[in-house]
Amino acid sequence: MANTPQSKKRARQNERRNAVNKARRSRIRTQLRKVEEAIASGDKDAATSALRAAQPELMRGVTKGVFHKNTASRKISRLSARVKALG
Image 1: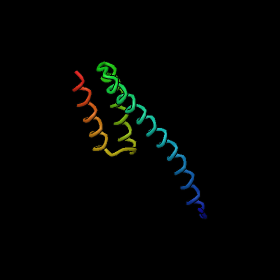
Image 2: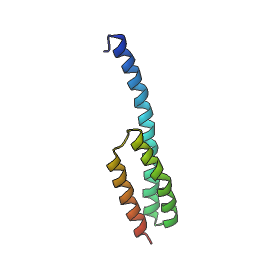
Image 3: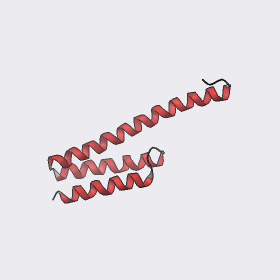
Image 4: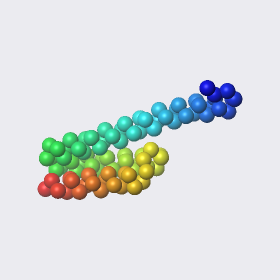
């Protein structure tokens, strides 16, 4: 348990940051799931629009430190290749 005032404050900050990051990660996963579902249904237009909505959300997660840049780039690349193959 935190004893010093500084460590107590850091614990409070970490809790808040954890909640923010959890919400952001959840929002990104939801966007990715929408793309996956659109690909599974075979609807290219829906998949394209879902991917367009997911890309900035993923990159925002990178700038906020939730995901690594290469991880986000890899996910976008693989999803866009699958959407392109739908045609």
